[in-house]
Every structure is written in C-alpha cells, then in structure tokens.
Image (cartoon, rainbow, N blue to C red; front, side, top):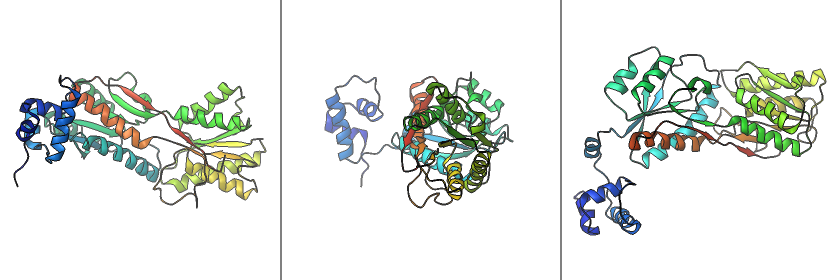
Length: 351
C-alpha cells in the first residue's frame, strides 16, 4: 500500500506542499485561514498521513529525540526510594504524552556525574538528543555551567535543592510546596485549630516555610515545641512512617497541647496516625491530620481505604509543563524560564 505524502494532502486541499507542511508542523507564523488550517488537518487524518521521520529530521536538523537524564548523584539526595520512583513515574507519563503529541521520542540517557566527558560526547558534540530533562537530581556545578554556556535546551524537573539554580539561565518546573502547606494550614484554622504541630523530614524546607508563613499569616504563635523534624530516611516509606510514629510519641509524652498535625509526607502522617491510635486519640475528633504527597504506587497501601487528607503535587502536569518549556526552546528559540505549579488540597476523613 502506497504511503500518503504531503503532495496527496496538497492536491485534496488545493494548497501547495510547503503550506501543507507548515500547517502540519504547527507553524503559528503561517498566514492562513483557520478554515483552511482545519481542512488540512482533517484531510491528513482521513488519509492516514504520518510524517516520514528520517526525512523530517534531516530537513529540520533535529533528532526528534529528548533525553531523560539518568545520572548518579553529585551529592547525596535524601529521598525515600519508593516515593521517588512513584513521583517520577507520573511526571514521565506527562512528559511522554506531551512530547509524543508533537512527534518527539522520550529516551533514557545516562550521564554519570563521574564522567566529565559524557555530556560533551553524547549531547553537545554528537547531538544524540535535541534537549534534556533532568528529573529531580541536579548534576555537578561544572555540568550546569557547560549547559548554560552552550545554550542547549534543558529543563530541570523539580530540582533539589531549587536554590542551586538561582542566577542560572536554565529552565525549571517546580511545585509550590510552600503554598500547598499554607492552604492546608488555612483549612485547619477555619476548622478551629490554633495549635498545629509540624512533623517532617528536615529536607522538606519549602513545606516548613509554608508552615511558618501560615502561622504568621493567621496570627498564630510559633511554638518550636510543636515542630518535630527528623533526618530523612533513604530506604522507603516504611522508614518515614516509623520516624513519624516516634516523633508523634515524643510530642504526646511531652504533654504539649495541640489539636492538629501537618505532616511533611503521607508516610510520615501514617506514623503519626499509628501513634495517635495507640494513645487512644480519635482522628479527626481529637486530633486532625493532614499529609503531603498523595502518590499512588508505593511499596504498599498506607491505608485500607482513602482516609488521609493531604496535599497533592501536580506531578503529571509538571511533566507536561516541562515538555512545553523544552519544546519552546527547541522549536521557537525561547529563552529559559521557571514555572511554579500549584498543588491541590485533597480533603478526606482525617481533617
């Protein structure tokens, strides 16, 4: 069966081949009526047109390939392994959907931090990919500087720590976790809670900032006895649950008054609930609890049924936004920019 070509579509629409090509490539600068543009897209669909990728790549001098960087850490990143994997999965889904819709392939690319020549060889010299997505991990400072000097299209998806990119002309996409915790704290305040504890890993600096900002905004005093931080467990969510359990036990034993808890993660919140239940406290009647993450696919279900009120990062949408920023650099020569997406407060039975 003969392959449908641009000429076939041009004959059906009574346009020249170059115009048809520009329509199918989404050229916004093309001066053509919306009716004709829609006609081209409809005819292309009816004829089952698909672009000849090798020819397209040669013509545009692109590989239509985006590298998702797998990189060893330049410095230790204290994140629970199973949570990290589950979060990355949803972001990659968003990336893949947005990129495939524009004719790009998302590929895994290994750029070891211990190999200073990997970036030059695979990316800057051989151009195996048109752009890079770094998922969470930040490369060494030298690599950041090389990417910036080269002006190579790159987006950092939820970089840790985000301050490491300050002053650099490099794109990034983050969730506004400070605002997420602030929204949860406001909700607790509207429910009459004025003594709210915060239990979290020390690395959740933006969530702690949200807690402190909310107290100031609501006119509530900061009682450091209600702030319980722990060193981040690397293994999995069970370790974070155990840490949350221990910190909640400490708070109960110290006898400090509180009526609600904002936890730094859902796993930590699960440990908080374990300790409260063991102490005979009813949730939410005696103590309200809100977590953070709402991520599916961890090692095991934290609860037998949806129960925990929490804050959900827009992980899928972050992947889509990262793809949009990257393609704007590749296709339009856009300047790097940072995007801050808003999390969602998910209310269930615990608050």
